Length: 252
Image (tube, rainbow, N blue to C red; front, side, top):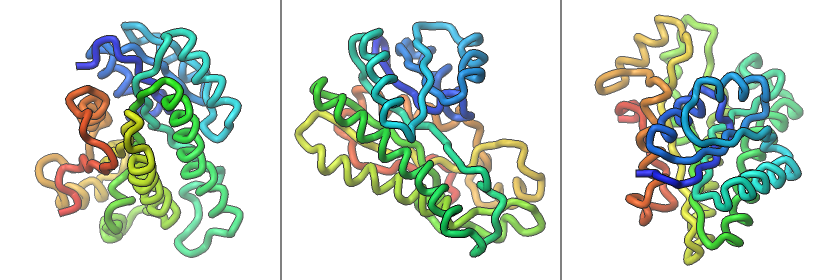
């Protein structure tokens, strides 16, 4: 489905990014694996088979984005699609109680995460316009689509912060805005809003979450990769401006 397509993955070393890297290589895509952590990039590439290029990338830096895009284009002569699976966060992320974040802490979270996604999308739009076509997929969350189920967090140290929901809702609308503005340019923009991904969460939370779902509950990173691969393929060439939810029915 993706044979010879060149896909640029930002945040390639994250849970979804690394699973997606393996999935797309199995579908014979050529990859640009980009991440801010070069040590993790080295570890990731050791276990992969296929054609790929690894580059360091900071999505909050215009210079870093331009350099990484240029390296990818020079190496492969094209970029068919861009997936932003990055998860930038500040030093206090997840440590501040509800309603307690300072202005500086709020700005840090929004600037790094939402600001970084906007900056990265802008850079790829400019490249894709010159190329004559392109495909952007931003990774978001059900927390940007629905209100959190706060009761699921009872008795745990976990939380679903306001900033997180605002960031993810912003990413969702980033896709809508760009898709409409880019009509008649051969550039598609879509968003994948995933359900929760397993990451050693406490058992009480997992049980509560499972009751909200149709068959599985919390997902493994690989569970969302099929939808991303589909959106990257020509089979989805008439899908743009959509936020597609993969969450085992959590929002019902």
